[in-house]
Length: 582
Image (cartoon, rainbow, N blue to C red; front, side):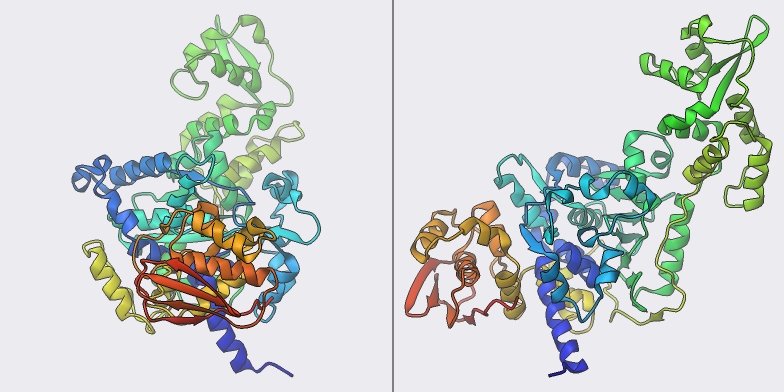
């Protein structure tokens, strides 16, 4: 029987709410509202608000915004680890994931946009073999790992796992954590924070001064973007080589595959311009030196001229740069003369290299006036002026121009149908946590972000249980694999042996089964749901219920009952455990 459009709409809304609970890489890609909903869930969490009580942030309000952000960065660096262990959240299969969303997106579209489904990016990613780089080659055939995005509570709970001395999270988790902390602790308005996702990375753009990018645990200013270090080269990788699939902001989102967009068009135009300004700089001798330091292979196209005893001498650029490794001086700043003195005279030759650009001449060219790297005519004149018989000279200049100007492949605002995400959030940095929660509660049903935020927040006192249970039963491979073929009694004993405390501090908020299993702790309701999940995964069908009383939750499986203590305050609820749907 054919599925009606109305049925698909209803199921899509249910899937959206359930996906807000698990927040896998694919789910966030398909439902771009989820990224910002996770940010709001983190803002509602008490965890980041407690950071403000840490002595590390004493005197924070007296600091200028940039200093606050830099100090916040160090706190994140000290307390969180970038986790890319693909086994953290278990395994699934391409067929299973594609089947879940076949009504919404084609396999071809997924393969062009998601690393788990064959995406390898542009030439750069083919060159480094991206599947090997991320460890995906360990999974053969149709088996792929889940990449689940963590709430701040789940990030903090990593310290309970072996070999994790601090909290941890993957890139989307760190982006959402940073955005929430920027708002709560550094008092950066939400209107100044734009979240971006590429197929392999997530980061934020902060509209402060010349702009700041968050990159996993680190921050990147415009000066850092062009400093030629290995860390900056790594930070540049996503925007240089990938298209941006999602941009999300307090006003809404835009997605590269969807015709509908909800972001405010003026806000998006402003962001696009600011990001392009951040990614463009006029060449200077210092910038040229930074690029050559980063692009060592291109040094072979250059030579350095130096006057020794009244006569010009020449040295290959790669030999000159090599001396930087053993002394504090640099070839491309005002310590060049001191560096040259460190170089043995026999390294120099009396005549120039025939097929190399003279670095000094190019530096002088950039010093004489502004070179607009966005103007094709200016770039063409530059290439003609410094043409060389070096086979790679033109390619080297192209690379340098690309270093100075990255044109981000953002979702095109043209041919989009813009609608509103709902009533404005109207959340500001002067509001306390309780006022923000009340505001978001008031926006339920009026703002898509606000509604989904409570599902990402895992608050079962404010949301219906069915999306949460569907996520638990269908998408908890870690607990299923961990339990193996335990029978009911052994499973019950194991769950009872775990610490009787929830990853989520407050009443009504629940962890998923994989979090219970990974972090070795859980409230009785969480343990009961985990037990139900494992039993369903092991083929137990038929009626299964969960009854919550005062201080106790009872899981009913056929004629058996299993009781766990609970302090989550969800008394009087009777939940039916669904069958597995896939």
